[in-house]
Length: 69
Image 1: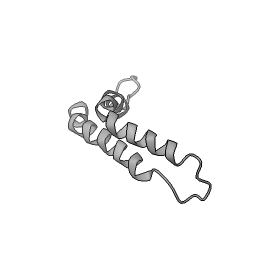
Image 2: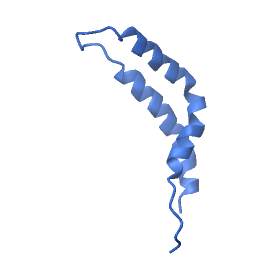
Image 3: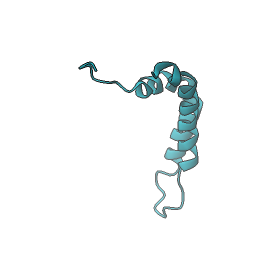
Image 4: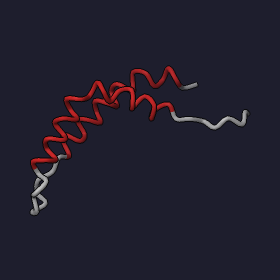
């Protein structure tokens, strides 16, 4: 076993996939601006948040297993 520190390739792949998910990010950011002043707690952007990360995860999944041993 080597003394090299293991680096998680998923984090690097997530960064490289973020530009492909700009539309979902903009939708999430627009939602957060819309609900910013909501004091009732009923409005949220959970759907847009998950849409954004689903896009990133889908992009990463196609590349991740090529980096694993």
